[in-house]
Image (tube, rainbow, N blue to C red; front, top):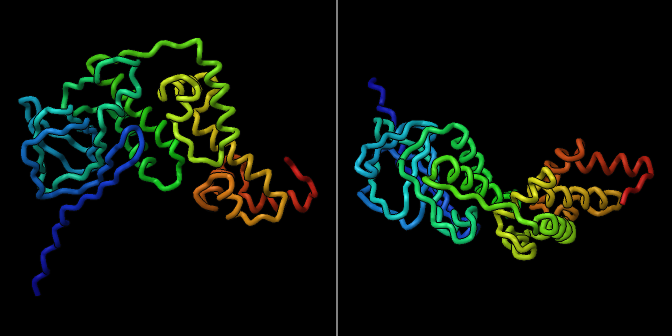
Length: 284
């Protein structure tokens, strides 16, 4: 009996709109037969080839993006796209409005310009993978997702932009950092956004994120997570259910709290509660 031929994987794609940094579209796709007609985007496009290879014409050149490489397109620059190998390609993409990239530039700086359509940059490729995964994960706070995306954009501009002006340090930074930490300590249960902190502190979002990291060694979202873990720990002396504690202090659910708590204190909340209750020690 003849063995039936293996089925060819169908072209598939999923996209998620992320309401951060002016709006970001995150795409994950596997294409074998798809061929994109020549077109241009209003947004910046940045993607990572996970397997296979993508071929496209860009600025008069035929480009082939292999696994691990990053494909990119400047707004308004025409390009096409299709499989460069028989098995097609699998990739993840971000479509980014120009205002998203402006968040990591000094006020009034022109939009960044990228000349190549593909770059081989393993550290940036790895950073892209971490960022794409984090932004689509259900648990991290909005603050963490915003900061991670800005880290990626700043690295992309610095490493491959035609020019990359850097905002100078400001005398406002020490006060801005103190105020940010006070806000996070007071509002840790909220899904606070980076632009809220920046507006209160009087700095741009990216300037504030870098200032906090530079002066404290931790980015803003790490301080937020620390506040939530401490607040959860303080509630473990009482009888409140763990799921209720998780919701009260700002975690997405009990499992999210458990992972963060174990990473911070070395024990899950239930084990910490047992130690407290058996020893009669109540820490506030």
